[in-house]
Image (tube, rainbow, N blue to C red; front, side, top):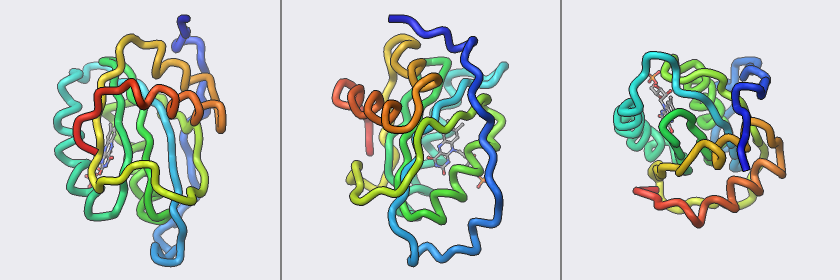
Amino acid sequence: MSFDISAATPAPYSRVPPFSAIAADDLPLYEFLYCSTLADGQSPSVIAQILARARPHNAAHEITGLLVFDGQHFCQHLEGPHAPLEALMARIADDPRHTSVCIAHEGPLAQRRYQRFDMGYAEAEGAAQIGALFTLRDEAALAHFLGLRPGFDVHGG
Ligand SMILES: Cc1cc2nc3c(=O)[nH]c(=O)nc-3n(C[C@H](O)[C@H](O)[C@H](O)COP(=O)(O)O)c2cc1C
C-alpha cells in the first residue's frame, strides 16, 4: 500500500487561546494524535534534540506518549491532563522544525495508554505507516496508530 502524502491537504492546526485559564486539576485526561513533516533544511538528527527537551518536560507535566519518526514524517500520540497538554500541543504546532502539523484525533481519555512519564520513541519503516495518518481521521486514525504500536521497537516511554 502506498500513500501520496504530498496530495493530502491537512487542515492547519489552530486553536483559540487561552487554555492556561483552565486549572489542570479540574480536568480529566485528554489525548492528541497528530502527524507532521520534517521542515526543509532540518536534519533527521533533530530528533535527538527534540527528545532531550521533551522527556523532562513531559515527565514534569505528567504527559505520556509515543513519538514515531520515519526520517521525513513525525507522528506523535500524547496524553495527559488537558490544560498542560493543550499548551504543549500549541508549542509543538508552532515549532519550526516541522510543518503541516495535522491533528488526526483528539479527545477525552478515560485511562492512560502509556504508563511511564517519559516520551517513547520509535522509528517507522517506510513512509506508509505514518503516511496513512495524513488521510485518516478520528477513530480510524486512532485505530490505525494503535494497530501499528505493537510492531514498533519503542525506546523509553
Ligand atoms: C515532532 C516534535 C515533537 C515534539 N514533542 C515534544 C514533547 O513531547 N514534549 C516537549 O516538551 N516538547 C516537544 N517538542 C518540542 C516543542 O515543540 C518545543 O520546542 C519545546 O516544548 C520547548 O518549548 P519552549 O522553548 O517554548 O519551552 C516537539 C517538537 C517536535 C518538532
